[in-house]
Image (cartoon, rainbow, N blue to C red; front, side):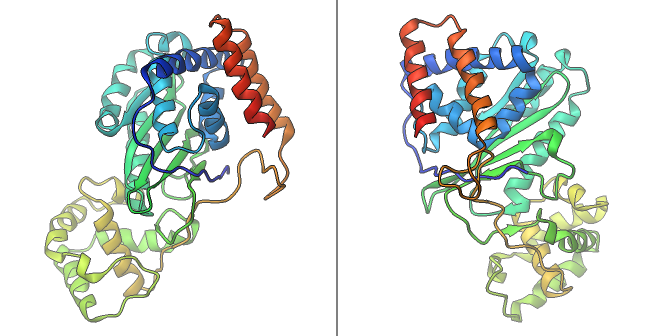
Length: 357
């Protein structure tokens, strides 16, 4: 399981038009050569690796540590391969803000080129967003969702949330082939500058909490609302970020009526129920812990390591073979392209500077 951190301060403004145009062209060339050598599935794997993704952004010429790298790289990739998706066998859907809500439609539009029904891809996109907005509540509301997929139906998700209080972002990476369970340790990596104490319902340690929470959602709404009201006189544990005053039992009653009527079989089905969001999951997890003793995890899934290791040997020395493979692939893509010589030299210089630091 790849994990990693990235310092991503809030970035204002947009990439200059002249730069973004070149970013699109270079992203297009690199993607073409990665796919021509190893296939579209290899490109998906690389994009799911936070270190490679960050290096990709640096080669394209964007600020290495900025939150804007995520949105700009995904945008450059999407625009760069526009019109040749069929030939590449790679498709990009979604984006920042309102563009993210067009993801299901864009997946459907690519259906004629796929080897399978697009419904499973639409489901994967929806569940990835649901997990990182409701099941993992870490203080970084999502504002960017990019879903990249291949003709064979394999996929990668790169999405990002922003904490306006700390002015830092958190990036979430998913690799479809590595997801055995959408609601248990599904990420290939989560990148952020710091760790917190989030409500983590997708941790392994939250298994019992997921089971009890699902059982609670199948009970009669009036019984569940009554249990929540009883909590008004209880002192909550300090580690739980849910305050009783933040919970409106009457407002949640409509959602509980929906879960009661649908009787979800498991936590994944509960999470996928229309209307079930962060407040619902928080309220149910609170009842599960205080009444039934099923405590969820409050461990932040962010880890301080990258797939290639660290230059100072922490947590382990740089994996030079894997690192060199990444660099060689990028060099071949750049030197084999038909872009102008001066742009080629600038790209190689950026690549060299990044590799040598």
